[in-house]
Image 1: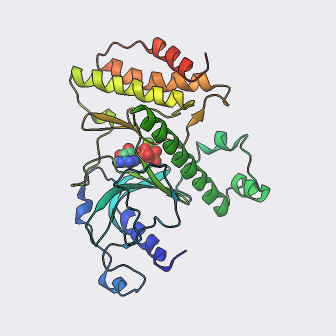
Image 2: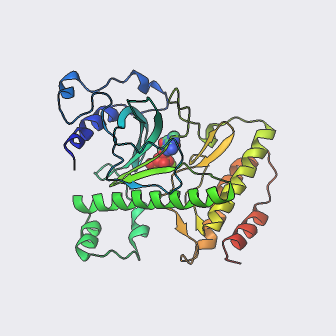
Length: 305
Ligand SMILES: Nc1ncnc2c1ncn2[C@@H]1O[C@H](COP(=O)(O)OP(=O)(O)OP(=O)(O)O)[C@@H](O)[C@H]1O
Ligand SMILES: [Mg+2]
């Protein structure tokens, strides 16, 4: 690990102070104190050098906004959301020489006592871990075990996003944020929101739309579900809270618990549950929806019929 990485915890502590995060006031946040600037391993601007080197990178061809340059720096802009299992931070990665910048949502899975483990039990069952020492650590929830579990969630989400992004790319229906990189318990993804102001896109649950918008959003939801089905997966926790809407475009997020519907004997049930969760929301707003017909089509697309 490089020296300047040791600044991570200080930055995170500062970010964690704020508990609700829906207001975009991160712009008021300060930079690192001048004293820390004297550290020769820190860049002259930004909080630290870009963590791109040494991370696992997202699928290619990469979008052109992804900053891969050695001279890029990361500036931490604050907390987007503190959640049950992870905290999401806003990071600007930019090149001081040219000013080119990208906005990234950094989702950091918790490995400490604040994490809730409700998703872990089922996930660990039947999963083979190479070394039994690691399996024991995870089963006994030692701090090493907790960190391993958090890392597995991050890796599962990163893989799922990469796969769905690639399939979306091929069919012209990208419905997930681009996964920039994975390092340990942190996944960095394309920030869905206003890149100028840093305001995150609203969740579908918060969107007040007229009927024409709703029809378009539902159609996009069925397209997104088709992308998942063709990848032979179910989201596993699809809801109007795990869906963002930016400029009328729908984007699915929060995918660590993605389900392989071919390997899982209850795969068809998971597909049906995803559909029901979102169909209920649209129906409550007056849309007529053939959920049964959609489920049948998705099962066919997933190769289960
Ligand atoms: N790529 C992104 N762009 C913009 N905002 C994001 C992004 N990813 C996550 N967020 C914000 O962070 C919130 C939490 O993200 P996510 O649902 O992935 O994590 P979580 O730990 O499951 O949180 P929760 O327990 O609230 O569901 C989202 O509702 C959204 O507001
Ligand atoms: Mg969520």
